[in-house]
Image (cartoon, rainbow, N blue to C red; front, side):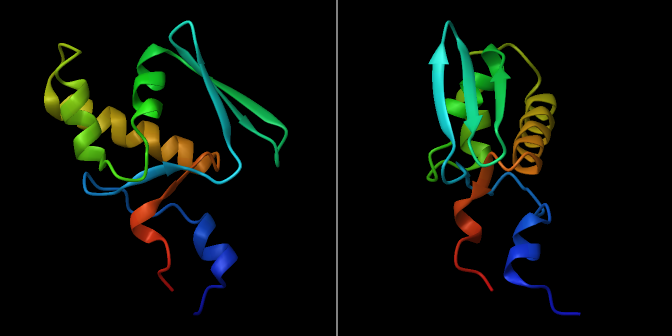
Length: 110
């Protein structure tokens, strides 16, 4: 079965610690009082991220891997690294499901 490009992009990719998340095109965001407010104009939705979510969001620049984000956060938060890796990966997957994040390392793949 051959998937069209549009359909293939909507299927959640296998996110690993080496994935490179980046805000999806058109997503507007602002950090206010430690929280991040994300606006998806195409869907008319607003998502508010708590302090930890905002810390992750600020680091999604299309250069850092999930591993890089975890390594930066582990210096700030007292938590087991394996737990943080799992939590950050699940969080980024949820952002992808809501079409708020895409992956720089998948760009251009057919």
